[in-house]
Structures are given as structure tokens and as C-alpha cells.
Amino acid sequence: MKMAIAATLLIACASAATAASQDKPNIVVILTDDWGSGDLGLCGILPDVKTPHLDQLARDGVLFTDGYITAPQCAPSRAGLLTGRYQQRFGFGCIGLGPLPLEETTIADRLKQAGYTTGMVGKWHLEPTAPDLHWAVKNHPELVNGNKVISLPFAVLEPYFPHSRGFDEFYYRRTSPYYANFDLAGRDVSPPKWEKSNDFRVDVHTEAALAFLERNKQKPFFLYLAYFAPHVPLEAPQKYLDRFPGEMPERRRYALAMISAVDDGIGRIVEQLKRDGLDQKTLIFFASDNGAPLGAHMPGGVMEDARPATEGGPAWDGSRNDPFRGEKGMLSDGGIRVPFIAAWPGTIPAGQRFADPVITLDIAATANALAGLPDDPKLDGVNLLPYLTGKKSGAPHAEIYWKFWNQAAVRSGDWKFIQAGSRGQLLFNLKEDQEEHHNLIARYPEKAKELQRKLGNWADQMTPAGLPDGGGNDQEAKWYQYYFEQELK
Image (cartoon, rainbow, N blue to C red; front, side):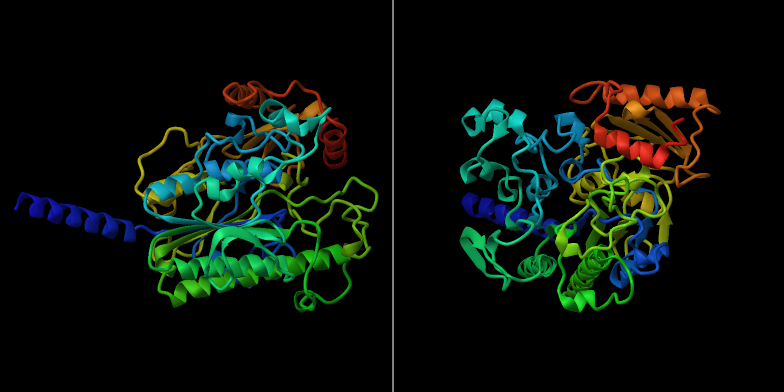
């Protein structure tokens, strides 16, 4: 009798746990690559861009007008997003200082503990790469010859791949071949293998995301979909290019086509969620990993390049950062302020424009709270749901911070302070001057000192500790000379 009662209790507890897990909302995080702030149709900044599905997603939820990424470069910004921690805390300040340390906890690790099925599709870029010389020397000196990493065998890389970082299901890689444990028809692939495809990479990523959703529609899921677009190398099928006729640089046409393909994919994802009755059970975040690279200071840069996109050329990927100044690699808003949307029909009131600063660190903190997990002081982000549903008022953050190469910056309310490498310092009031045209250092020296002090206190907690030493590299000097020559005089 006692054994029967115990068994009954165990079954009841298991059923209750399953029911509680089923009640948890699904979470989808969509990240694009080098997609500038101006390329969102709803904003009405650039008339040639077409993003009807993203525009509707924002109308159904919230557009963060002051949404930021943690770094103006892809790998560190992804590390910040997926851990919910400033990547400088674990020394991953830029490409070359990776990979994502194995002891760091990802969103997928957290949600898996809470009963979610976790999936990753697309670009990862958190495994060891050839520039990670310091890591290789320390961990695998046999792979180093002089100052170069000469090889990275699969066995060395695999512990850093998505399936080793909390993701149950994966269709990983930016282009073919893709490493996957399911196929585009939704069938298991066991053991995982490299899947070859000649199809357009954006469409492949969409199909893989749809397959994951179909496989897991009966249980709570977390999907991280990282499109490799509109990052170079530029490519697009004719059906997308034909949507953008007329005179324009070919790089712009290809970027618009790739953006349109991503937008189509997001439309299909939303439609599938609706068809399965999951739209009101699913929170969707959308953001870019950094601003667009413009190559504007180079000969043949964004304002001059008219060559076909397939011929290579300057760094411009065809996307734009209007109305903000600067580009990928800079801590001006053109490098770090990105399209940022959240939608959850029935929970987040529709049609919001949220003007207080938020940052992609908030995605992990929000997901952690929705999963019913305890607050973790290691997370640097904020649960945004109370602010979006009216349960909390005010700004989620007192300050948000950046440190990249020899630059550092802080935003506090409407004020933003930038240490621009060796070029000097900049102070802007973004409420009055969102395009960062008027350096207010001379007018408000005490405000600049206050923000520099806060920035220094934050930087002292990072790895390596402290603010950059005021030096700079040629790239940074060219950027700030091009964009801020008058403001830094």
C-alpha cells in the first residue's frame, strides 16, 4: 500500500511539473548580422527598404527606439546577448579574445533547466577562431606556429558548438554545409552530420527554423535564429533582387534583397505560430548584432561604390545606419544602436514605442524570469516585461556601458559620453541631438566628469580592468576623423 501511495504521489508530481512547464511561454530570439538602424520600414527613414512583416511585428508589440547591442562587432555582441552578461566580464571584448568561455552560462542552459526544448539555427561565431591566438597558446599550443593559429580540428571546436552550450537541436553554421541533428523536413539526424545545400542561405535558415517549430509545437521551446544577413558576402536570388528596381548601388540592392528575404522568413514564422495556436504563447525578440559597416572613410566607400556587389570591394554591406552617425566598430550610435523589437500578442500591449534605453542583455534576464527561474545577480540585464505591461514605470537602466578596442562609452538617461580612443572625448544630449552632432564637453564639463567616473567604475569590474589607456589604432583614428573631425577639435 505504501509503495502504491508513493508511486501515485510521484506520478502526480510529475504531472504537475509537466503542466507547469507547458504553461511557460515560448521564446524566439531572432538576430541579424550587420543590419543598420535605418533599415526598418516602420521608421520611415529610408524609403527604399521594405520590411512589412517586421513592421507588423512592431505594431503588434513594441519598437525600442533606443535599443542597443553590447558591442559594435558580431562575436562579442553575441556573447553578451546569449549570456546576459557584459562580455567584458569574461574578457571577450572583441574578435581575437574569444571563444565564449565554457564556464559561462547561456540562455539555452538556463531554459533547458526549466523544461524548455532549445534550438539554434544559423550563425554562431562563439567557437574558437583563427584570431583567438591567446586562447590557442594557453589551451592548445600544438595548434600554434609563431603568432598564427595553424589549425582548429573539429574535436577542439566541438565543446564550443551550440549543442555543447545548452542547445538540444541545431542547424548550425552561416552557410553550407550546415552541422545539424535534424533536417529541413523535420526528421531526426542521428548522429549529427554536415548537411549540404545549394539554396540561398537566408531561406535555408528560415526553413530550419520552421522545422524546429513544427517538431516542438507541443512543448515549451526556445529558438535562437541567427540569420547571416545582410553581412557580406552579399548574395540573393533574382526573385528578391527584382523587388528593388531602379538606380542604386548594387551593394544597396543586394542588401535590400537580403533584408527582404529575412522579413519574408519572419512573416512565415509568425504565420506558423498563428496556425498552430502559439502566437499568444510566444514572445519574439528581434535585433541586429551591430550597426552596418559603411567603409565610408575609404576610397570607394558607401557614398561612392557603384560596382556589382559580387566583385567584392569595400567593407560596405549595403545596409544603412541613418539617422545615426558612425558604423560597425564605433561606439557612436551608428555602431551600437540597432533595430530592436519585442512582440507577445495578448501580453505586451500593441503599438508601443519605448523610448528609454534598453540593451540586448535584457533578453536573457527577461527569458530567465518568464521561465520561472530565480533571479541571478550575475545577469546584467533587466526583465523588460513589467515595463512593457505597465507594472513598472521609469527607465529599466540607470546606465548602460560599452568598451571596445580603445573606445569606451556610457549612456545615462539622455546623456552619452564617449572616450574616442586617441581622438578625444565626446558628450552628447541624445534627446536634443540624437545624431550626435554637437559635442557638449566644453559646455558641461562637470557632466562629462560625472559620466567618465561612472564609466571608470564600471570598467574596473571588467576583464581586463580599467578604461582603455587613450591609445588607438589606425582604424579607429580614421573613423573618428571622418565622422567627428569638427566635434573633436
